[in-house]
Length: 374
Image 1 (spheres, rainbow, N blue to C red):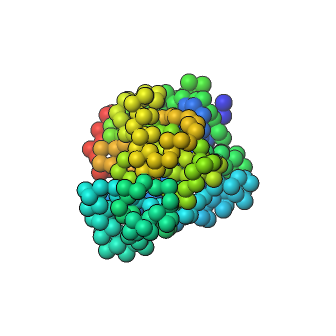
Image 2: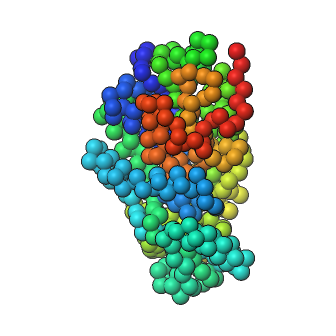
Image 3: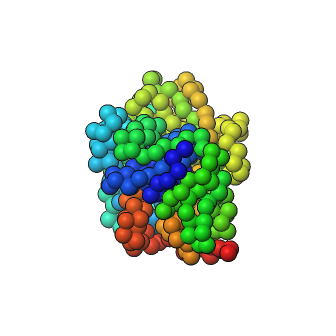
């Protein structure tokens, strides 16, 4: 095993891969360590929506981060395609957020008003306009917000492209390698201990999603991140053309260019249990059928689950760990790791290179009372 790197990134999901490839682009010697397969946890389980106006419920730094990260996507995937030959199937058809009841109309109108007040380019569609865009939607739909600049991507192809780009940039990639401890001298992190040996580094970045709390807890750092299981399914779309991502109170449908429609998703506390349940999958499918009734006749392809890294305040945790040298965290993106990955990588790499944290000031670990033991 390679014993030294300038920087070790722990966690090979979308966040860790994005950070590692960005670091390596400037010649930094990077090792990326993943306990399983690259992107095998929350990243591969995602639906691939790039939808900050759908995901975030009010103005603020998290929405601003989502909008800025979405704006990076065109260039990001173009660079990946040029470097790897992989088309990540970025779709920019926009997103429909629908209301099916009077109560949901009130919710939709409230959302529309603040987003319009903030200056976002959105449209409120009537029942007729909704069904002109998507004839297969339920006749119960009363209104919808159309957000033309939101998007979705094939997250599996994105992960594949990032791994290839990391290889091309000489990132030392280690799969099926568990970090079981952090090496330290006083309050300086000097590397990691894995199940395959020790590695030395000047800096360790913990980007291991829901597992970050376990790793950091070994040196007495209490990071409030925990797993939330999301169960999700895929059906065939051959007889059910959808042009837009459709999001409602009962679930969402994300049409893909590979002939699938991804439908989801549950949010349940099950610890680190990744299995799907009959109740969870049936809830997802019933929600999808309420929005698009014809989906009941679509071929069922598969169901799976991922563990989303949630935090105590719903915001990612990004930046240096207080009272420690050589220790940075990038976790807690919950269900928006795909969306927030390119900007997270830029901010973390900016900090590593220059010590600058102003852009991620709202997300710094110091907002929590992290306890560090001698």
